[in-house]
Every structure is written in structure tokens, then in C-alpha cells.
Image (cartoon, rainbow, N blue to C red; front, side):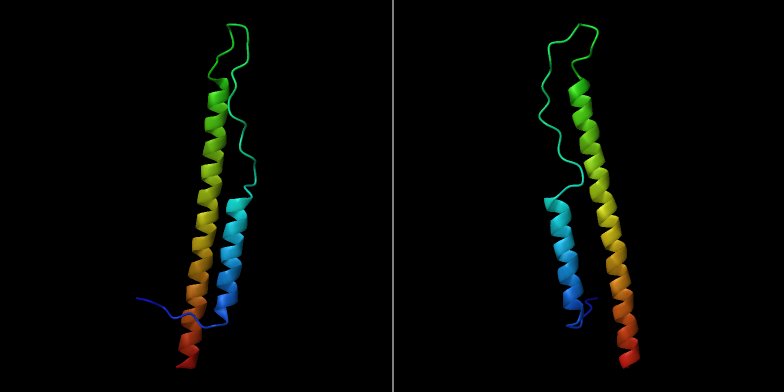
Length: 90
């Protein structure tokens, strides 16, 4: 079912869109540099930079999931408010 959003909510939608763009454009933690395996004694694992990159990627994925969850909750709240406004109009 499609819900018509009143014009006053356009501002809220634009703010959400801008926040999403800001969140995507400026991640809270910078991406790690490409892994460079330094010359090191044999007892140090050469996979260390790779595991650090994987951990950083995992953190970024979790941050994206958290943002998506927050946006879903915000949209649900806007839909609820919109439904309440429509009921008041009737």
C-alpha cells in the first residue's frame, strides 16, 4: 500500500537524504591503507595486515547496518505520524 506523504514532510525526507549522503560520504573511521607486508622476523605472521583490513571492513559493515536500522526506525516513526495525521483529518 502506497502512503502519500504531505508536502511538509518533504523537508524531513530531504534531511534524511542529506544525512544518508553525509554518512556515506564521510565514514566515521577512515579506510585502512592498503596492506603492506613489512620485512619482519619469521615469527610474525604476514597475515596480520590482512586480518586488520578484514576487521576494519567488518567494523564498517556493522556501522552501515546500524545506520540502516536507525533509518528504518525513523521511517517507521514518520509513517506512524503520517497515519495519525490522516486519521485526524478524517
